[in-house]
Image (spheres, rainbow, N blue to C red):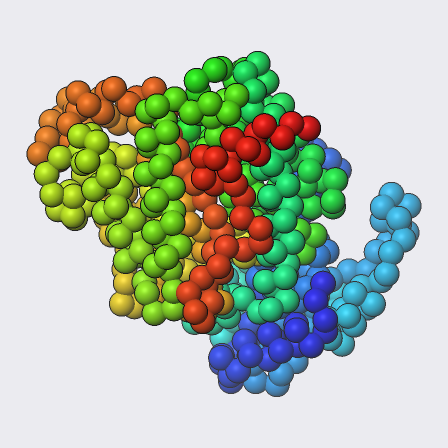
Length: 465
């Protein structure tokens, strides 16, 4: 955890943003059974609870009284049975002391505490729950119907937390760089293993071992696939084949739960086919264009659209698209090839704070989501500020089912040359993703940048383990 003053300052700032407006209730996560109660999934604490209370322990809840300033942790001390099975460790008082919390009460007393607050007409601010156990707890605590919980969550609290968590503190940036370093090592192993005959799941396993070996974990289920046109395709028990491209989208999560998220698309055996090389260079140019444009004051929507215009222009030069590239983008024709957004926020969550509502995190009062195919999938569009951390992940994909559907429907025939598109189906999908920290001067890639040019990738692949 960070120093006591970090958590004290965060709670104080949050309280000031809701001053004299009732009680802030932040629930931690509980253990989640896998196939029976005592066999649980690896514990992952709620990120907002971590951000303000720093306690990576299950079955806790935190309260901040915006009127009195009281800060209370509700949780139970370990029983002897717990110690027998899990071992002795510092008690709850010691953990709380390290984050500046002096008041500790039994978890069950939270029910009486909230009941008294409701009786006196005090507002209870809480976040939309995303786990079933938390939904059940809040239903019992607040007396709301389960279906009403999300809409009853406090928009004012959501907005206050987003405004704080989006701007990364120096201590957070250091954690993000640790995640970046582990993610770098993971991907280098993947590059070194990408030879014909090696299985996708073998590469994924070796990469994930890199994270676990340094006490980290993966920030999301790794994507390791020769079918890069399937945006989130997970590794299979299939062998790599010559002349194929392998898309690897994976990242690490530090012990303090800060994430990295990288994608590289590499040629099996280090040999780009002529068509793959052409498409790869376009995606690389798009990645570099986003890095050039991302800076304070720019909207990430404008960066996304600039990248889409570049992709459409380059595909027009190839004869895959036709007509005016900017008009094609404005009408959404380019989304046949890039049906997702340029990136998302990154931090304690790999898709940072997505549980608080994507419209709240990635958009603001001036920039609202689109309903247009492709653009509707842009997760982060708001005006960039120094301290934001976002992913930069343009891609070009040849998705057979989507191509066939649009072709049969004769969609965007003024912009898409379907016979030429068919010639590139074998390329699959290519995506190149970096993590960007927005600085006062522009932006920087977090940590050491993974090999990204074709020559850099081939060189990294040749350095076998």
